[in-house]
Amino acid sequence: MAKFALDKTYIDWLKALKLKIATTQLKAAVAVHHELVLLYFDIGRMIVERQSGSNWGDALIQQIAIDLKAEFPDVAGFSRSNLYSMKQFFLFYRDTPEFIHRLGGQIPWRHHVLILQKTKNFKEALFYVQASHENNWSRNILGIQIETNLYARQGAAIHNFEKK
Image 1 (tube, helix red, strand yellow):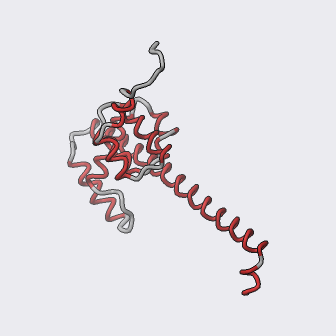
Image 2 (cartoon, helix red, strand yellow):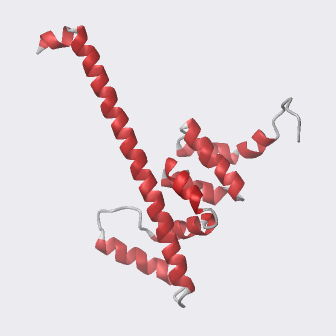
Image 3 (cartoon, rainbow, N blue to C red):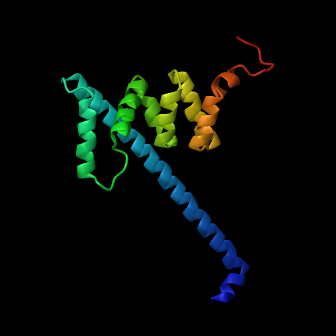
């Protein structure tokens, strides 16, 4: 076994193998994020539709949380507050569902919740979604960027481009 550890061909091969594993794990995580965001958007839509077609109101969200926790006791993500966030997520992006399918799954769900809570409009939200993805921001960094109003600072940055 020790002779493999010293063989340069083996070391290079092992390095490539480790890279392939890490790359595949990252792709899998991104795919999971994407599918969860699509699921949460759809759950939000279903909640809005059910509430508008009945007199259940916000009590519906609490009941869904109880029932889903009973059905899926080991699955996180179906708390009352998270279900409410799903509803808000749908309401915020319902006029731009292509956004959800194209960009929405590129950042984690909790990033979306933070963006929903802190931004004022779709254009600002889109800016932070794209910036989070492009810069691989953690949720803490995203929060700092929103709190320090990066969106407005980027728009007001000094530049030498002509306005058209």
